[in-house]
Length: 495
Image (cartoon, rainbow, N blue to C red):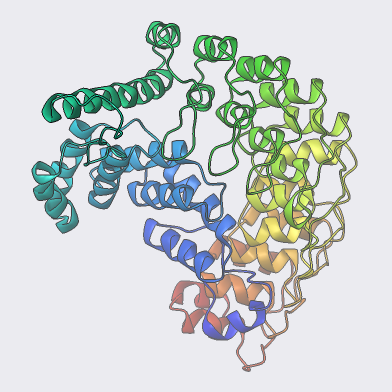
């Protein structure tokens, strides 16, 4: 991070707030900063990178974002997956929350045995909440949710059975009905095709729902159980049924990457243009997870690649964040607007640069995307890539205006120097970047490199003729900045 004075120069653009970190603690500080400034999408991206490298804290926090739908679409399956990954790495809070997910059936079928196992593990690691909940488990009544505690009375004109017999008979019937409902839902989720067919033959209600409003068809579509989807559709299950989040089977199958099920649901009349409560269509959900085959199936069936969602975001912008070149090429070939921008003037190319998606950048540049379009804070794709330390992305974008700057006055050379991108610094200098251009606080690339301890960058700048005697607005030279930052060896280079 830059010192407090330098941060003033970049405050309006958060230019250095999200630079890549050198260690785990710094990385979490960067993520915390993203959360504090409300950039939850950026926080989720950083967490995902750390989670994929095996960091249990990142896995736990990413799972929490997916559970709440903050910065990412709400997705209980992904929440469960990341929570389990963190729990398996002995993260006590993750173990506790995973147990609660097993207890409530969120993202996974209810399983009291697994819940108890993970509560025991969390309690053993000192989680007080887990210990308390574990103590409560034996005392919890073994009555299914929704069961009535009072037996219905007979109508006045009915012949009366003995009270005990009537009560037990009706309770048994109610229990059987509930068993059919929960049995159908559980079998559909688990992929138990024979059980589902037997329940259908026995007259079980295919429209029964779980507590989240999911029918058996919804659960089977989400889990990728094609045979069960076919069986339920043949039994006239509603192809466009919605759960409490407005998610339809087509959306759930698309989000899960199940192209065969998506194709089958469309052929049974599923609505391609339907949106969930967040405004996402099946195409958008598939694109968010880079399910290319699903995207192809949906567009080939008539889904519109030009659709705009909340805040001006497009399908191409969604794909630009992480998807491969081939998917972006397909969207562009099917009419996705290349240089459209959202309400913050961020284009697909800007987003690809922000996330460091080199394949996305290549696809967009190949299709003549305009690299000069800046966001509403004046940052072009090149500047954003350099702010985030995305070297591969920056290399692809160098070639335009190398003297452009952020509102804080930071040029590509200054940003590259800050992140220690020595080869990019040399490349910019070779293309004519002036080494002594200063930002709004009077810092040039040399001073920034000295402050960050980037010795190789300092050497490259000195070779290129950077003026070591320039002073910033605090009247400090590069050597003064190096000494103040504790980089005495670099200060010696400047004498």
